[in-house]
Image 1 (spheres, one colour):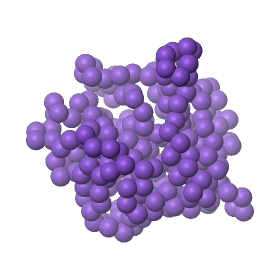
Image 2 (tube, rainbow, N blue to C red; image 1 turned 180 degrees about the vertical axis):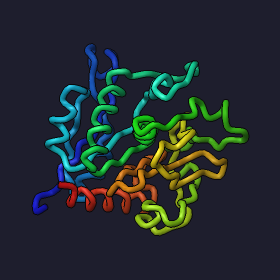
Image 3 (tube, helix red, strand yellow; image 1 turned 135 degrees about the vertical axis):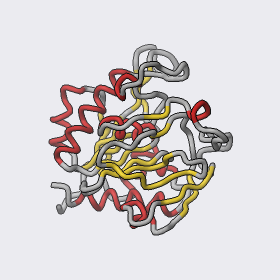
Image 4 (cartoon, one colour; image 1 turned 90 degrees about the vertical axis):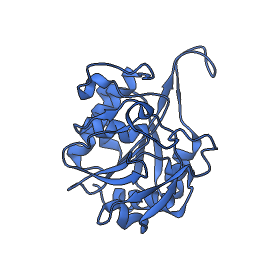
Length: 240
């Protein structure tokens, strides 16, 4: 590929209020900046599930972003919904459609925070609905300090794709989530864990590049975060 790879980035969405009196999309600038800095061309994807295949025809890689939302527990077989769960049904419907299509096409995928959780559910896994209720002596996964600083460390699984990318056994990460992967999806391996046992990363084995991480590498807390974007864009250069 001689041109720079085109990277689709999913948007978050909000109801009327704040920025607009009508429903609006939102995305922090550092997602797109991280893609551009790594050599990709960021393109933002509105939530149209019926256009997922058209989007996939255009892009060379997919970033599933985080946001103020949770995946509907019914999608992974939960009988009840925790009271802290916030749904964005249209966003989830769109992201499931585009993830499934990207996996079939073997397009590189990077899931970030809620994007990792969505990726795991799309592939057949389950989630912890609220970490404080299910993990004893849990770390502060919704860290009180700024997101531009680390909140805790994660241990990277040896022999994983993530390990080869970051070149470290332990990395410091930021943390802004109340949910996490419970059962990794079939075909997925856990590639990072926190000290309290919470899953912090997954990857789809046999796929050129399909990684989800629970932290936010777009803040570039450590060189490992930058290495992830560099490796993602490099994979996208060879995607089609």
